[in-house]
Length: 85
Image (tube, rainbow, N blue to C red):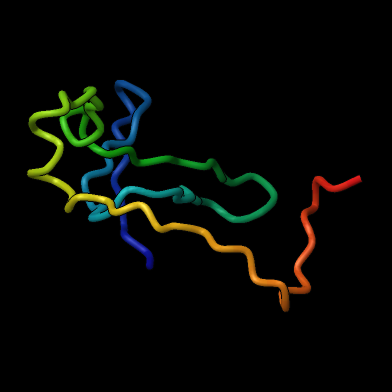
């Protein structure tokens, strides 16, 4: 995707507002020899990445209860542990 940009020569900056998703982009101008070619990363807004520990009472709101499965060894199993010596 290419988006034309206008430079602000007085402040030596580009203002890029055409990104719709976070990710890595490239800003290129002027060709390979004397041009400008720089990477640009767009991050999520800070409120979208705010991580907080949940208390145990609010956890069921976000996830169904986890039932533990009982493990019964199968004598026919051929799998071996990667940690076995």
